[in-house]
Length: 101
Image (cartoon, rainbow, N blue to C red; front, side, top):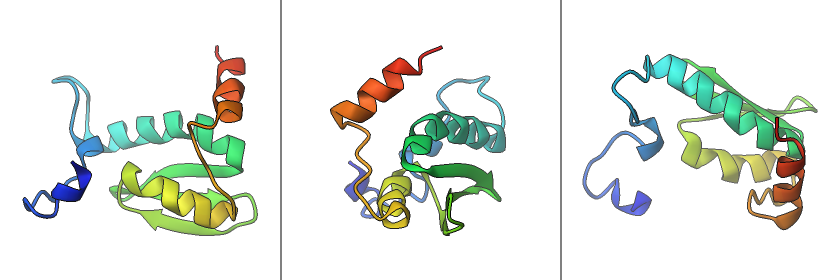
């Protein structure tokens, strides 16, 4: 479906759609999404922040990239980390489950 977005002229990524009528502002939603994504990105030495309607993805070494939406985070994460960043890797899932609050 994501590949068809351009064909149909959809400018927004599906992750930018509000899931609830009282979900809040777009900025607040992006801040919340970044906070959630950071729980996993931290395992790869990366952090994500909302910035001017987009996101900045940064490594611990100071490398950074601006990404438009959550769909663009993982390819950039791999580029910045210099290694595969597979959120479905069993070791990553085990680490996330061990961090549960």
